[in-house]
Image 1 (tube, rainbow, N blue to C red):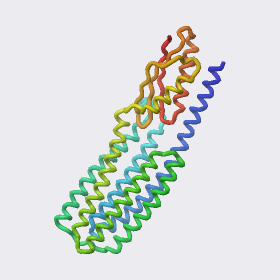
Image 2: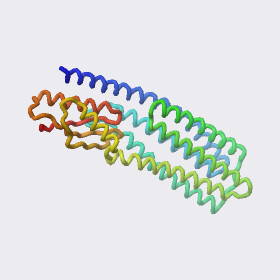
Image 3: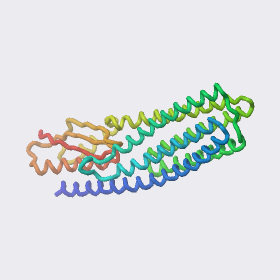
Length: 306
């Protein structure tokens, strides 16, 4: 009776977790929409001014904003895909959609980054006159201010919703502030009779794009390769399993990423004289207790009589 009551409580916890995850995804999507809207606005004005001014630094900044748009949109779509229920062809769900999308964005960032470097080197060798410099100053200044405000909003939202995705976006916004500042300095130096510095500014902006691509690829490679959980999470899982009545010990605990969530395989020890039905109930209690953790998607429990 006690095991049944405990199991019902754990089921309610798991249901609450599912509801919390849904609410969390809705809030993250709202914050993401604001970031996408801001980047679309910045991309359009920087692309137009970049072409009119003939500044490779401003064009690089436009491409940087375009990369941010693709990144946000891909992750937003992948969140939708990963939230779909398991089906016959994907029996453990669609969680891998998010790291796959992010990795594709990382590859795109690498391609774009190297292309900008190629164009920037050409501008250093053959400097071009920058036109409409006043407009360039205005647009880059607007970009810097917008990104500072966006970063502050994202920092606040990341804390409120405990979202690593929004936190990463806030860091990217701060990087954009720095890259836009570099572009502004490059254009200013060009106006002083040093047009080749526009090319150097373009290279520095490209380096920021490459850095973003590298960090995105590295993080999501761990997800795609099924990296194991860190020691702290393993200890937390073990503690949750051992606190279940009837569990005498653990003799194996393995973990790996499936998408951005963990699957856990755990061997628990129960009394060899314990009836099969009770042993099964103990195993279910362990499963539900561990699955109450936000990082865990699925737990497989093996029962070893001792």
